[in-house]
Image (cartoon, rainbow, N blue to C red; front, side, top):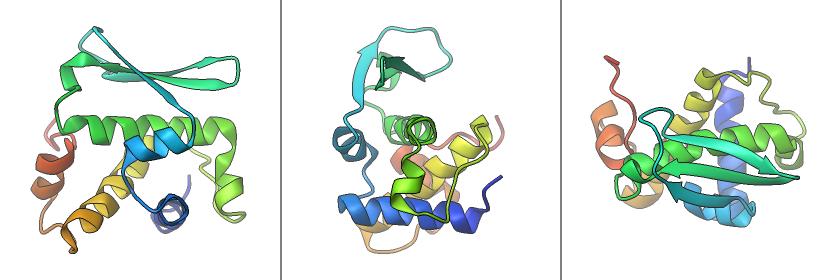
Length: 140
């Protein structure tokens, strides 16, 4: 499993490369198609491939919710793993763990940096991130 430090370096490198930590802008730059659909309660999103083209199907239930940021960042982790883009951004950093926990850690790093980008300071609490970007409830 990739260390948190390496994961943060990877997220920072991608954010610097694209000039933002907004996962919707990353998806655009990575040519990831996003489709909003009526889907079951869970999962809120899923990454599929049409040939080599990644497609993220996201639930309409979160289309206008701040939760869409965390969910898309989570799915982008899967896209980056699949396409091997981690080697492109940093030859030392690889996401080895394809688990959901690894994608959640990646998403957490993305939205933390997005918070800093938008507010010019670190979030004070987990609740700041949860409110702004829909992080999951720790009690779930």
